[in-house]
Image (cartoon, rainbow, N blue to C red; front, side):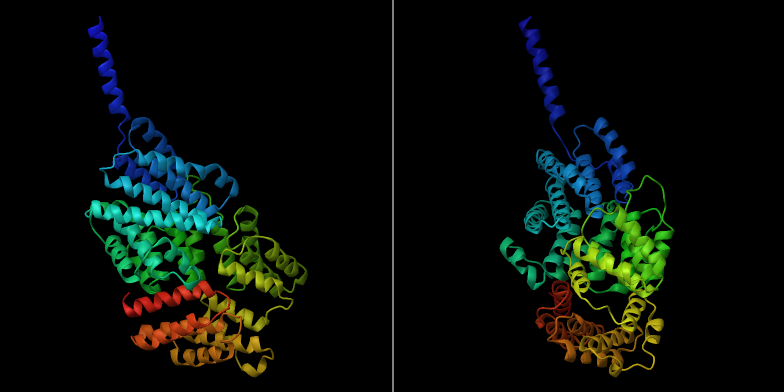
Length: 496
């Protein structure tokens, strides 16, 4: 009897021991869930994860995939109530994957991804110190994983991205990388990400949704190869109807590349199925796209939709300030002033755009309507309409020093976008002369633009000279973001 009992206990012990042994198995069912989640079909993805948990209780990949859902939800919607409910689960999942099989390349990789996702969420909620620590830990985890599993190509996507970003940290945030001991290189980081994004190996194809998103953003903002980034979207035939993550990226990049009509088209052709994560960002982007064509009624409508649904703080001041401009252009000064006040009281100043919006909202004067219309048309890609605003005008038609400065800068930007580079440089230089000791961002941005023109021509020494001039200007609007872009330019020109 005792012998039989011992056998039973031994078998049960072996059984439970085997059941408790967790693994990282990115099998076909997990790949399908990942594909849906990275299209922002989060409801479908959640249903698949529930099935995976029942069918594969020893598999830790569903734990990682569930973190993707919460990351996209928090990062894109910034709802404080979601943050309270979902954010603690990041640590719970981290604890789970740390108990997994350490001989798997996904062991350290999963930890790094969860930490990076946690860092990006922390940024959105203003916890920059915590975000810095998470980035450092993720960086070190990926660095270790590359040593242990050099053939695991997925390492290169996020390690390369971190390497590129760290290599271009502006002076205002340099303390973060110095304190945390992180060193980066834009050139080397981009090489890793580019090779992975364009690779034909099986893993690169499985994770294409994510790599296309990361690579295109880095290409656009850090390498300043905007046309290459937009061409990549076309060349890779990204599905901008059924993949909402790629649609969000493409609409955002089009808007920042002064193509408001493209942004409108992408959003209006989205698959409207309820299985996708509901995002208020579509109204945000449509509001800007319409404002840039001076379609003020439509802009106000979409901005109202956005502010009534969005629970976060990033770019909220900027939106209210843009709404005040729309009402101002309509001649509705009462509503214009009311929305100026909202730009002061709502949102945060985490971003440079919100800092600028707050400064503008506190100003008692309104922008010159000619300069404002020219700016909006130019920002939307309607460059000929923008230039028409200045027909027959010279700096003598503007009486305030800041208006003379803005006139030179706006004219330069329009010429730049129309391909008239020498006329652009001439007016950028005027903007630098008039504004290099002022608080407005025009002079620093003018130096950056001249640097980019020379870089495109292959005149790298001249490009570096103007990038440094941009960085050397102190105490102006958009200081951190302009410094980052100028530092990226210097890194490109020097090959660092």
